[in-house]
Amino acid sequence: MRKPSLFLAAAATILASQAPSHAADAKAGRAVARAKCQVCHGIDGIAKMPVAPHLAGESDIYLQTQLKAFRTGKRENEMMSVVAKGLSDEDISNVAAWYASIELSVKVPE
Image 1 (cartoon, one colour):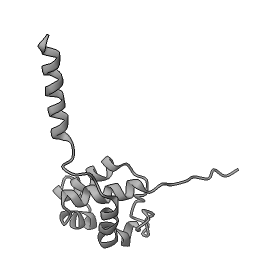
Image 2 (cartoon, rainbow, N blue to C red):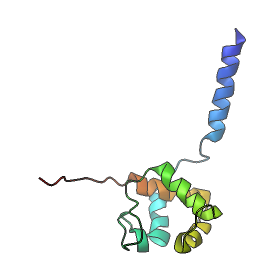
Image 3 (cartoon, rainbow, N blue to C red):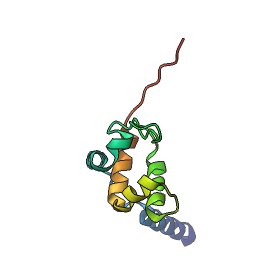
Image 4 (cartoon, rainbow, N blue to C red):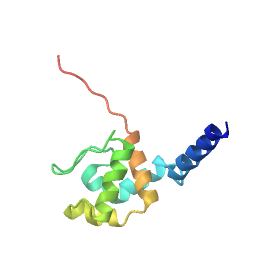
């Protein structure tokens, strides 16, 4: 009967190893966004340039995945590839938390 407890211990170890090394800090992410992102994507996540996507309300995991892809070269864009190369894992986590924390509201026309 030790197998279930051994399985649970192994599962807990695996999950713990996949957890982020720190909790994302949206406030720190806002500072990164001000320095690196706001010109194109806006500090509020609403793009200021027609070719830049809105980031407000996007999911945290989506934003992190895309920023890491730009950083590694898996995804390429003339501007984003350069910007992402200068971001640490912590910066990426924080800026993703910032943009994901922005709440949007929608008004459907009558």
